[in-house]
Length: 69
Image (cartoon, rainbow, N blue to C red; front, side, top):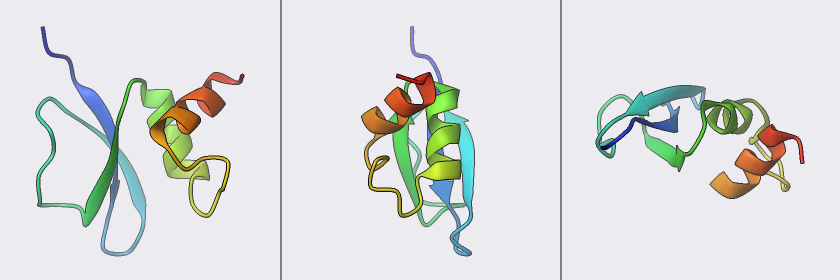
């Protein structure tokens, strides 16, 4: 059973938006996407705190930081 995965989409204005997608996202609304994330909390953490943050560069780091460990 496939389940939706969370991504952070970067728009042309460089704003970030969390979205979910069942298949891998393709070109369209965003310049590029970061992910897939296992949890929505990890994607939201990356969208809010990932810009120029050396501690939050990868998906795994965002997931860990969002978890609070």
